[in-house]
Image 1 (cartoon, rainbow, N blue to C red):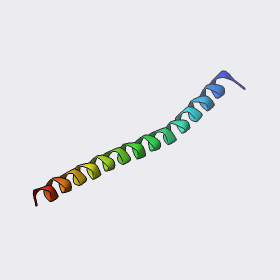
Image 2: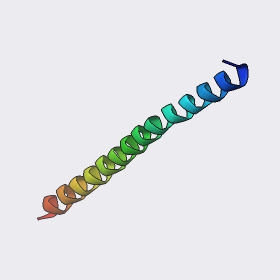
Image 3: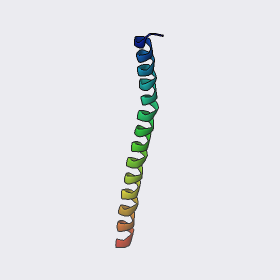
Length: 52
């Protein structure tokens, strides 16, 4: 196999491996944001119910 073919294959596999990492990163970021929003809503609810 030539050096060019080896380089092309290794770059292609490296790019392919980046996709799951990006997806995992996106999912983790969405979960983090959702958790933050949920906590903010819960603390707001506790503040409102404490006033009564």
